[in-house]
Image (cartoon, rainbow, N blue to C red; front, side, top):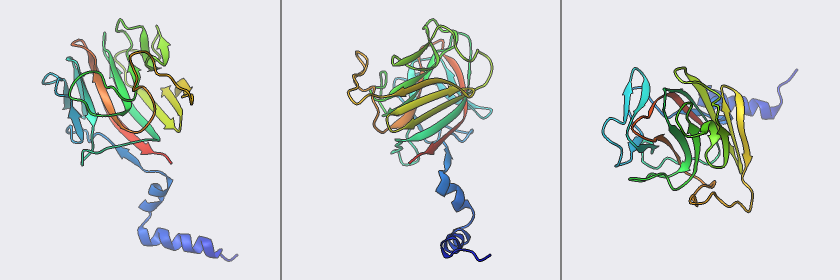
Length: 216
């Protein structure tokens, strides 16, 4: 059977560019953390020294109160629609969070974007897997302290989905007439980057394998 001309043309493109082009056409997953350094990341100026560090291939959050922003090699990292995945481990009393569609700030809670909660045993009743102050997971966390678990966030258009260990915890579509929670005017979709929160001096959380895939 002969090969259609359109398919022959596509095959010539793949051969010319190399088979790596296939992954790029399907949506390339990009690592945000090299496991060796904080390259591409920028801590807020109010983060105490040692709040964010790297050891044994792990991005460690150790106390303090601040935020670590992904800025990329050029300082201009920006995402809109994406699949974000990371492995996370909390320890007793830890309170952290993963922000998206946010922007770097020297200090204070990020004004822009949404926060995905990371908390199993901290006193805050809003637990891991919730979209903080919007669609919360209350009282009981879907993943315990002291074990690695998978955190998956997907944003497509106005829809936000979260999974913990492949179990969905949030499926939220931002309404056209969306009114953000009181005191959180910037809690809305747009574009921006990611940030990792250190909530307080008792915060002890590990992150690794942070990967993002841009979606159409």
